[in-house]
Image 1 (cartoon, rainbow, N blue to C red):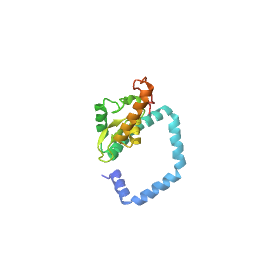
Image 2: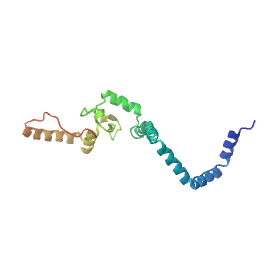
Image 3: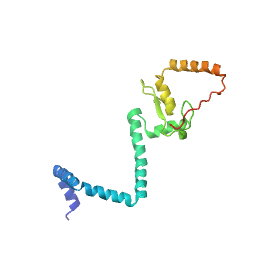
Image 4: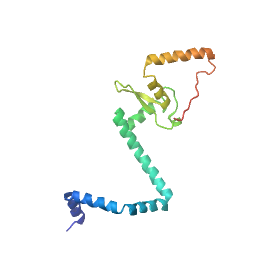
Length: 166
């Protein structure tokens, strides 16, 4: 029995350039018509279209983040989540909960050995980066803050108000 799908697939494989040229011409010729159809479909049921868009975004979001983590830090999203769970879903430095940050915590790592130290909120990660990951400079900053605290009589109890929704 003649299998039309198999024949067409084989024909398309052997005539790949012809098929690509035909599709390109077809798409150019019918571009406006396809665009108008897409707009009609979208506006005929806007809520469903938006819902599909949100679903596609969240479905793709984790895949994109997993790929980025593997490329940059050589860890998976699962490993990231394990590290976050081990830190009780809080920043390794200031203990701010992940729920108070708009974006994910940053992966803090040693730039020379590539070893991952932990997950930090954007503020702590920026602070360490701006101090050049230098323990000496950070200790100098602590001493400096200690001097100003003596003048201030320590009334703030060590607590600092700062934006949390970064």
